[in-house]
Image (cartoon, rainbow, N blue to C red):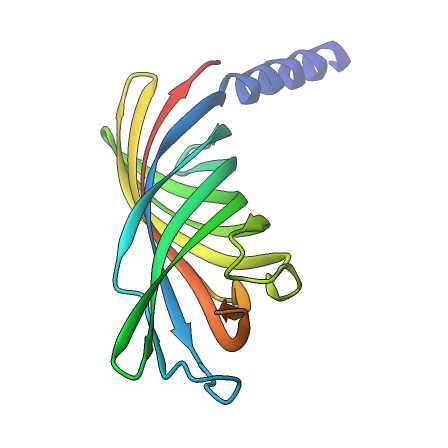
Amino acid sequence: MKKAWVFIFCLTLGSIQAQIDLGVKAGVNAPGIRLENFKTSAGAIEELQSPDRHFGFHLGAFAKINALLLFIQPEVLYTNLNANVHALEAGNKQNLNLNFHRLDIPVLIGKKIGPVRLMVAPVYSINLDSSNEISRDDLEAGSFGYQAGVGVEFGKFHVDLKYEGHFSETARSIIINETPYTADMRVNQLILSMGFDLL
């Protein structure tokens, strides 16, 4: 009887291991910046706008755990984000480029319907660096957010399209003409990824 339980345990463990896929992924993103609570008392800038999206990229690895009804896919991604901010002063517009380097850790929870993947995820983003328009002291060490999207699987390949928003601020100020301005800055992005299962 004891040997039978050992056999069942080993069979179950092997089945679980067979349901874990390891892979790599890469893609492009189009970030945007939401600016709130901007304070002008420190200088002459009257308004900040962020209407433009510029392409960045991401690359990394994932582990996909296939359960009976859902899949869970934790990922570790290096992400580069580029965005423009327009500073308005007396009717004149000044363009500022912001460049972020982050480590993103989303945990996708999804459902497969045929080849289609539906997914949502909490995500934690660790800020590694930024352009000099944001001081290092005002750049948050990390921020929490969410992702939601849809994808398609073709054998070992899968393509995902997701939107990411953030619950917490990315930075607390922005530097314009060497003057810091207080602003609640949050980064969102449209994400297009391609992944490949290695194991």
